[in-house]
Length: 238
Image (cartoon, rainbow, N blue to C red; front, side, top):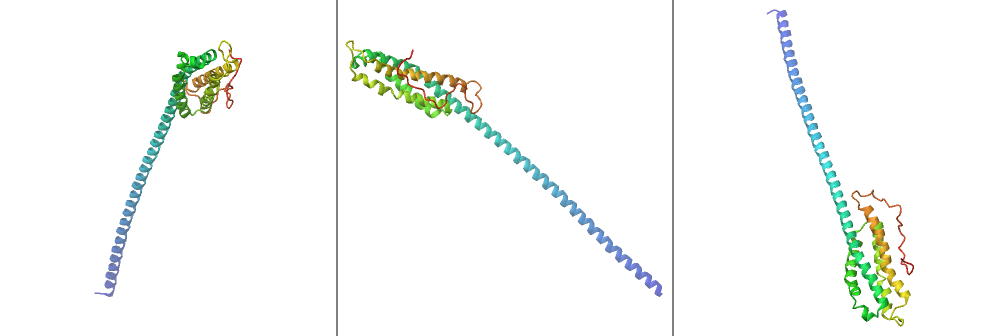
């Protein structure tokens, strides 16, 4: 074989080897590209899964917020109903007590104590007082509205003067007709009258607070006199 032929065959062999190497590199590049594409697809799937998880988490947070808001609304409504029920009890027991206390004051003013305590009007005062006290205690716990709670506390304070105002009837000097001094009568009669005055304020404010649509949080009626205790008159009532 001629030297030229050997050189030609050698060149062909080198070319074939180079071609095989190039083909191998091409196949490797294809595999790498395919692997990269698979990685991209996997990354896309992972991103989609993460987004789905994030969306589920957002939905869960929204649901929890809605449930929390609903629970708060239910608690507020229940609190409103509890306050209303407690105030209704105060109003319903206050009237009989006021009537019984006025009758007791009048009876003690014109009759000696031993006779007065046997009268139906005086005997009715005890049960009426107990019922009213129970309603006031319940309201003092249930009522959270600041102004209404103040009025309930004012009723309790005024009613607490009953013993102080009625005890003097047992030992006072009476006139020839058995009647007690007028100043004692005024002071005793003033207690239920003062409670009646607070009751009127309580009823008016309760209607405003617990109407079908509750007023805005913190709203205060324009005619309210917050912080001013109701005076206990000793004379001059009508």
